[in-house]
Length: 482
Image 1 (cartoon, helix red, strand yellow):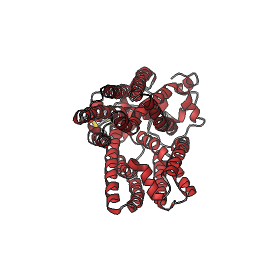
Image 2 (image 1 turned 90 degrees about the vertical axis):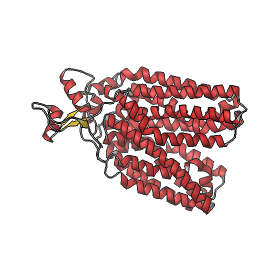
Image 3 (image 1 turned 60 degrees about the vertical axis):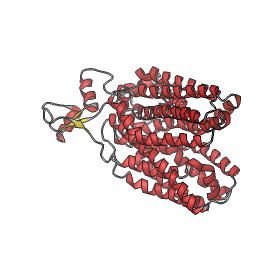
Image 4 (image 1 turned 180 degrees about the vertical axis):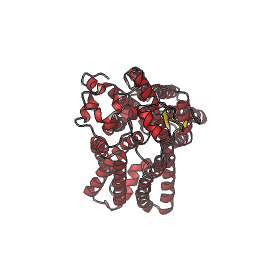
């Protein structure tokens, strides 16, 4: 049989997490104080800046379908590099956009690139990795991006502290520089060639109507919208709840963000690795994360009822809530994102993930008005709503599990054996010709297919046949099935 198997490494897999860290530095330099940042950079009033950012952010969502189509046509890496270029130019121009028209134009183009960026990055993970490698790459990318966000926020704070209001201009240019440095880091990445890794393949006629006909994927997307509201709670609802309802010191808000950021950066890879080694199905891991969100939100209802007067007691309780919440985030995020990546057919993965990213964008747009309206009724009401949305999201993920492709639900590690046994055929024979045997995800599908296992080979991963009548998945979608 030859030497023992080992886990196959993704060529250039360091590139995406490192690029995400550099990208995170740029993002962290303006996101924590967006309104103030753009007010001083452009010289426009806070009211005007807020209105422009809201409108351009909503309009920017329209770029998602275009980005998805571009990914399917040109490949995710090329589109990602183009988005980096747009962001470089946008942030370099912000200090010169003093008029309302100029600011709105730059903000619109930059917002469109920002909205499309996460979907394209997820598509890139789908192109360069497969099986459990996607989970590993997603966890590492998210952890380093969070580390970059924290570093960027600290760097911007120091620049502004030493340079005053002029520091905001330097931060804008530093942001553009970070994106310029991140882009070339992606160059070593190479798309996986084969059944589920073909990049840039476009199936004729397989546009967004294929996404809309895919009911299980729409359920996954709907569940993510509900969970995305939970992610917005930390940045939108948490500060208001502490100050307006608990009458606690505002410093607790900063402490909550710091704890969340540090834990995400320090423990993201570890927690993701434990979940993978436990063999958890992605649907169940995502559902567990939603359950932990619900537990944290229930604790907020208890805090909102007791309203402790003791500062240390309140602080300790809020720290415990943030830890549980962050643990839910660390378990949910990699599983949910890679579930969407793996459930999408390779030939139209860009369109699928653009639709999936819409759930994040809509939740982010809805959250501020929803939370403030509910908080005006009672400080515990928004948390009660979030407990419900988290529970429904978990139930949806568990219910849809059996309707999703087996290899999307359960990650299987790819391994490599240096010496191939005689007599292998199919995809395994191709690997043998290259001096190795593919086992794990690819071999499992090949072998099982020979035994007549209909779940072993997912027809969603045969790009050339997505829209063809010979593809059972495509034919089934017309009837709403899989």
